[in-house]
Length: 403
Ligand SMILES: Nc1ncnc2c1ncn2[C@@H]1O[C@H](COP(=O)(O)OP(=O)(O)OP(=O)(O)O)[C@@H](O)[C@H]1O
Ligand SMILES: O=C(O)[C@H](O)COP(=O)(O)O
Image (cartoon, rainbow, N blue to C red):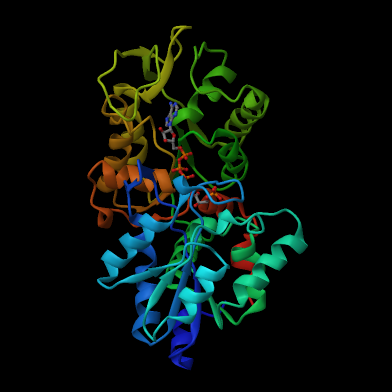
């Protein structure tokens, strides 16, 4: 995989360099609530601009349906990028149309432009190779060189991630190079005990990675929305909690395999429950109680791990030599359900091991809950991407950067 340093050494002055970033940042009423992914691409953008390149930054945001949707515009991300760079960033109001062509043509050496959301064009995510290829051809016409730096999207076989690199000289940016280095440490001769903490809401995505982790990890701690499918599989009432009913058989099999393979698979022993899902906009205080994990009332849902579980998980993390954590332990966006995520984050800060936080929401949780990012070994910008890497899958966006 050729890296950006090789590109810079060869000289980029005056060249149009297409940087595929992951600027898929959380927004609330058009305001960016966590700019971590924008900060993560700064080293690459700065190095190219300082070397005189005409930098064309492109990304997706959210999941628009292949057509323009103002709610998913990259304009706020573009202006935040400009603030962080300390210089004006040109913004194209389309992806490959007249605005993009004029904006790129008007770039001076060292200047940066951001294209509008790539997923406003159906070709970006199309399952049809020809349709994706045609869109990639239009993107290629805007650049002389390609730099892949959107780690959070490398598991997607999309035009700007997979098809476009083949059409231009291509290099890995600093973020992708760092992320791959870190994740390699988690897949090759990992230091033990190796503890994995899984939570969050994308239950089905993550269950698949457990299958692989059972052969690698020494301990698996389950929290967040993930936990209730496991508790159901143990025969417990889970009320109206987040549940992937069709995954109960698979989860049962995982628990049996963990037992056989001597992998400690730890589930919550108590949970914070409520009758209703909290209002994440008003964050109005909610009625909630702590119950044993096998006593969730039928009309209530588990929204965070309870105090006994927080202590239990901290004790299971205390001697870890390596930790990978993906997925918040509860609905951390609401103060009534943030304590579990805080407790796990604190346990990683207290750990002497190598700690990796993998995931857009998990990384955002660590930052918004006030933890110092440097207290962790690495905060990945990709949740799904890091999980699929750990699964041992070939990631399209990384394969496309190999010669
Ligand atoms: N018990 C629960 N019930 C419902 N939702 C929950 C629960 N616990 C956590 N969540 C939600 O899970 C969401 C994050 O899950 P997700 O799987 O997306 O995390 P992530 O993997 O870190 O993010 P990404 O995949 O975007 O990198 C949060 O918005 C949180 O509110
Ligand atoms: O948030 C993420 O995980 C990445 O930006 C990928 O987004 P996607 O799941 O919509 O492809």
